[in-house]
Amino acid sequence: MTDLTVNGRPLRFALDPQMPLLWALRDAANLTGTKYGCGVGDCGACMVLVDGAALRSCLVTLGEAEGRVVTTIEGLSRDRSHPVQQAMVAEQAIQCGFCTPGIVIAAAALLARNADPSEEEIVAAIPNLCRCGVYPRLVTAIRRASRVARRAERISAAPAPGIDTQDAAAAVPAIRAPEQENTRP
Ligand code: FES
Ligand code: FES
Image (cartoon, rainbow, N blue to C red; front, side, top):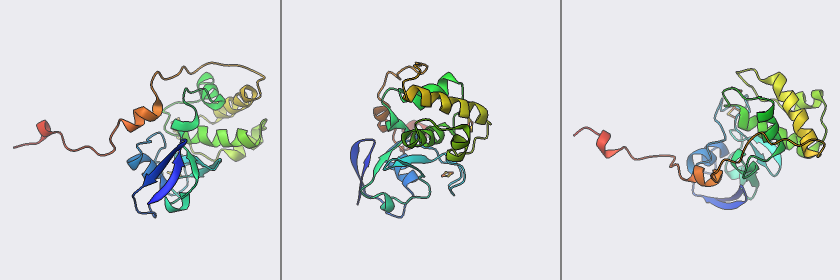
C-alpha cells in the first residue's frame, strides 16, 4: 500500500510501488488530465506537482511519491481560475492541447517561485515539448499569467466547467468490462 495526498485528498494505492506515478494517477485514480507522451522523461506531458515541484510523473515511482502531496491539472484549481489557465486560454496558447496540462503545471510551479519571470527564465523553466509549436504564445501567456498573479491585470477567459473536474474524472472507469451487446455469441 502506498499513501499519498492527491489533489487535497488522501489516497491509498494497492499497486506495485515500482509502478510509475503517471500510471497510478491515470489508470487507478482516473486523473487522465496528466498525459502520457514519451514515457522516458523527454516531453513533459506527464508533469505534476510533487510537494510544489513540477516533476515528470513517468520518472517517479509510486513508492517514491509515498507521503508526498501531489497536484495534477485537475487539482490546480476547481474552476479554471488559476492565472496560468486563464492566460493560456486568453492568449490562445493551445492547439491540440495534449502538451497543455504539463505546461500549465510547469508554469504554475515557476510562478510560485518567481512572481515575475523574464522570457529567458520562462524558456529555461518550461522544457516541455509541443508538437504543435505554441512556444511563442506560451511565453506571452506565462508573462501575462504572472501579471494576473501579481494582480497587475485581471482576465476571465476560461469559464468554470460546470462540473467538478475531480468527480468527472472519477466517474470514468479506467478499465471497462466489454459491453455485453458487443460480444458475439
Ligand atoms: Fe513523461 Fe514524456 S511522458 S516526460
Ligand atoms: Fe499540441 Fe502542444 S498544443 S502538442
